Length: 252
Image 1 (tube, rainbow, N blue to C red):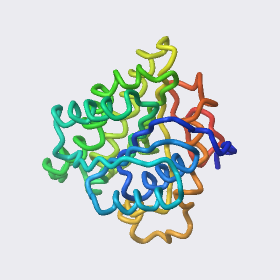
Image 2: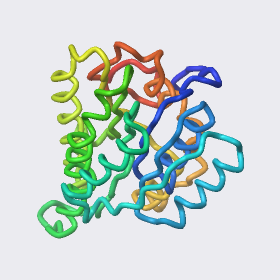
Image 3: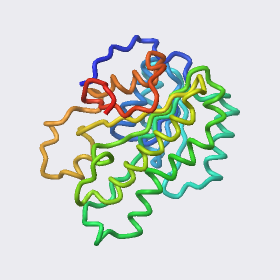
């Protein structure tokens, strides 16, 4: 597991947007970011889940979060422009984005893959991440130290049979991260990286491997050190890397 001990005030005064904040890794990341001082913007498609997390963070005495209900599958450019305008009026900047939301799709040969599901997976996993990052770039530039973190996968580096759109979307995610990181190499204030969370005890993992014993995998809380590291100032200079949350933190 990536070893990093985050100080309690690591993310004090930072504004961080987390997509897919209602469940699994996104929910735990939002919780950890808030516990370390960040004002967290909770973005997801299920309002009830976001409200539940909002209440939890507020009850714990963390900085007051914000809720953004948004279905990335149907979101278009106008939705992201509206999001940018709202965040600008409310916060004036953005110190971090965790692109956590993903669709698994189906596990079947490409020959049999449903084109409608393929487009849904690519929309959520790739297109929405592109549109959101592009639209929010002025807010990231307004930060003294901004971090954009994409979520990758081992099947996004070496394709495996039956992983279909999910694997292809993660290859695209890796490429988007690398291109953006190279473009921002000399920006001075924005770094871009990928996290491969690895096998983690989430609903998505259970759907992908229904016969697997979930207890054999770490919980989302156990893989959070890398998420905290990349969102905090200690990762300045780390740009264009894919890091393994269950490894030693060396670029993969």
